[in-house]
Image (cartoon, rainbow, N blue to C red; front, side, top):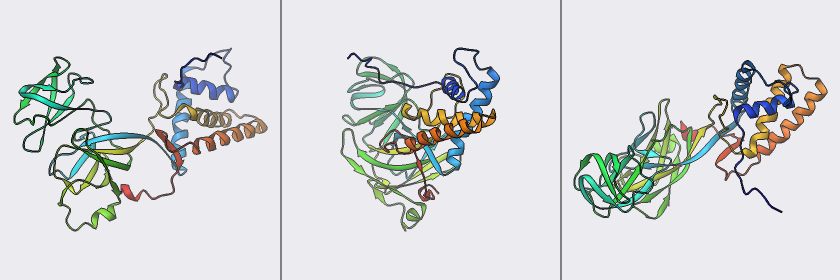
Length: 314
């Protein structure tokens, strides 16, 4: 039996609202479309629904794996509007040759003009610059240029810095290009404060995350003794709210029914739906809600009861 072979499926904001409104009996797909005013009000209800689940003890977040590029002797790293060098995606290669603004690397695949670039130096530090142009499959031109580049040393590039996460769940460190990974421990504030000497240097194996308003701060222990190390962190971000009509939800499509039926119940209350029908809709909504709660935690998005006090984030 032939299949489409297409595994990608999602709905836009308006399609989610249409589905919910149809279940609530206020929209007929064969009839007149919802008005702009209705979409505005129902979008507000949709965003409020997700916010209400958070307030009800359900932590809803997206999980991302981000990289923080550690610097020799630097103990803290900001994530947010004033973020240090960090990214969700990056390119890792090595330096073949070069000085000043002209360098040759193992490969420029995935690099673009304007990217940030870090180059390991003989001194054990990383020199950071931006790329002016990608001249070939191995050649780059930099904006400022530096000196004392380490031939064979690590070269990292990325486009966008990390935004501020809600919390950090787990992580590991990787030394040098292609090095081994070492798990780290995420500490609570209390555990971090117990260290009598916080300036000890070495390979970072423990971190405490302090989620301040503008920028979250990652405190590393021991303080990095080298700059050719990347700290990979499991970052939890809040769901992005729906704004534009074409916005797609920031969670797996398997959870669409939980949102659609939950919104339909909300709209049913708003429009005075008959009680028996509303109760049946509520039962369906609860079923899909529980289905979402039971989704594997290995997915890229989590939707589960959070009974902790978030001690790691204070």
